[in-house]
Length: 220
Ligand SMILES: O=C(CO)[C@H](O)[C@H](O)COP(=O)(O)O
Ligand SMILES: [Co+2]
Image 1 (cartoon, rainbow, N blue to C red):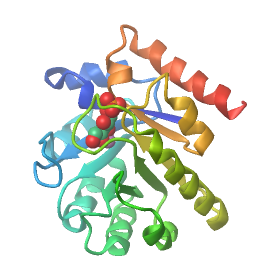
Image 2: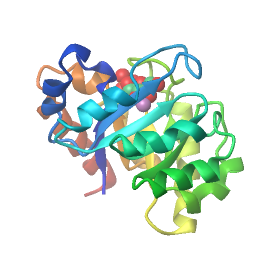
Image 3: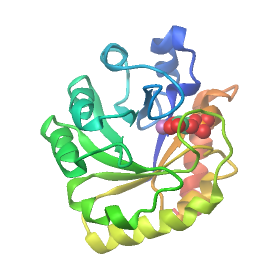
Image 4: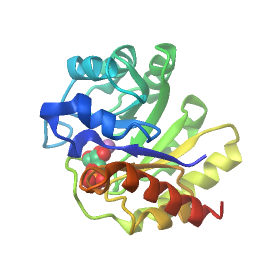
């Protein structure tokens, strides 16, 4: 199943309830948590996740770009994240972190930055429900898509297929009408798009357009 996860990083932070209502036809609301340390930007934390969980029409896909995810990740699951993704570059014990997310009732995922290879983390697949391949340097919305990450997406898809089970492959950063096709061809099935969705005049139409383009590329 192909899924669209619009990033609220590009939404109006003064009106998050109505901004979430605008993406109600998407599968997930992607929530970028940045701590000003792991990445040079600061966004939102647990109290905001708790608040938007109460008003969101769709489940929250929390992408933690923070230090010490071992400590914080399960709290994002408890606060209302239905999926919680941590960066392997920041985790001390990724197995324990993934297990603590699942124990708190959420889907667990790990993310790799553009410069981080997947292979050393392939052994984590039994512990997670999704792998996020970043297609920009984490920290900011509106950056250019890094097509050179498609080789890594292919590698993750092959490893996931060999492993079996239902592990999703997510791409995040610069995903748009122009780039979603190559993500599908490389094997991604969950597409995060911030500026491409919230920058559109008609947000629900843009979500449908992305979905249709992805389905067409997948040959559905
Ligand atoms: O994790 C992120 C940045 O670190 C965001 O999810 C991502 O950048 C989405 O924004 P855009 O689609 O505009 O690139
Ligand atoms: Co993100």
